[in-house]
Amino acid sequence: MAGCQPCSRSEDQSPQPSSSGYPLQAVMGEESPGPSAPRVDPHPPPPSCGWKRRREESEEETAPGAEDVWVVETLCGLKMKLKRQRLSSVLPEHHEVFNRLLEDPVVKRFLAWDKNLRVSDKYLLSTVIAYFSRAGLFSWQFRRIHFFLALYLANDMEEDNQAPKQAIFSFLYGKNRSQRPLFHKLRFQFIRSMGWKTRVSREECEEIQAFDPELWVWGRDRTLMP
Image (cartoon, rainbow, N blue to C red; front, side, top):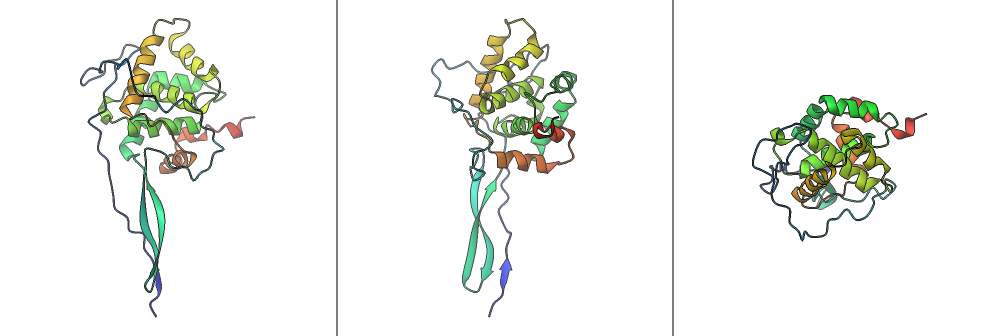
């Protein structure tokens, strides 16, 4: 009688940067290489960020940025057992972009400024990497502004109140409100470049953190705050 053998074979799929992605116009004195940002559509399709995702939701939820495939788990004679495996769109290059931006002096000051982790705990920062993977940009196109756009959007999806997002504005611009319309325009373009896929599951966040579990920002855990 044939024995049961595990089979972990799955096809390797490495998505390439989408041609629909656009490098966004940078602010705070930076220049963004590549083609200029597209004109904003005055009648865009409704984005998927009109609701708030809570961390307590089911971990069975699959993020839109991932695909499900069925792989053989065990073989036993003529019987086989299948399991569903999620293929993440996050690549090592997206982690490298994130690590590079962590060395940016403005980003460093921001993370040090957010001592209470109101706007930049480990799950929100994981979501930033997930958004990078969906934006369709090449690694060299990511700039400081993309970090703050993704973090603002992560807070928009995760938090129920406006205070965390206003804290980002306070840090970047102080009391100067003249830059906010430009920021929102870039935010809209960033969401559109992701194909309106703003939903990130807790499972995907934890997979992102597991890629480099020793990275210092994963210690930004609200549950460990005194």
